[in-house]
Length: 332
Image (cartoon, rainbow, N blue to C red; front, side, top):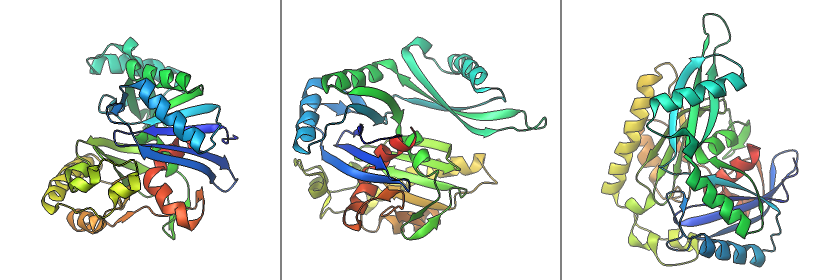
């Protein structure tokens, strides 16, 4: 698909990321990027609070960077999005969709007509002895979706889809590629720690499937000095020369460990083989070694991927901030 006229947007509590790409046949060629501080009070926890102010700010950056996209895809994360795994009889996709509606309504205290349901088959039984499938389900409140559609309308862009970070991460890492100079095999079980300003998302994936998803209510602001939260419109500058509070990193790591232990208890024959760090607060000195020592699993920051067609000079920046926006395009 020609992605040139599609803007992929990820609006976080701290920063907003947008990217325009072209399918080069060997990956996504980055055409243009925007990265700026999200205006205070306009977005929080995936919810858009002040759409007019946010729209005006995004429009200014689009004009400044000569971006004239006609369509938009949104990538979000929010603790208001409910994710669950269900085991259901193996059926056709249309039949699974009907069953999911019944199972979600039975298992969760929600009104189905107030949510948008998205699902992915994690593992499908292929014979009579394995006649059930594991299904990953995400339920997003319609009121969240409506605000993004309102934003698209104010930006005069056609909204194509709103998708969650976990699915975009899975899409990005469902490709054989060279990561940080070494071959990455999607068959391996990999934990992706997407470290944001407020939250950390832990996604364990294999073959493009989400085996485990958990949002940890701790992010970079919890273990970085006040310099990280400085009142600056330059996101990169706000990340420079910050001090890490090792005690708070320890608390953050305990939450990571808790999630990993839970995964291991449910997947004894499928251990995590490596950990990749991405997100706005991933590029912190010594963080990979903290994680490797604590979890006894090799950890590294994503700094280069052969999927991204871009100069080495700007590749690291894209890997740190734009993986979710890229995954939203790959997912299409």
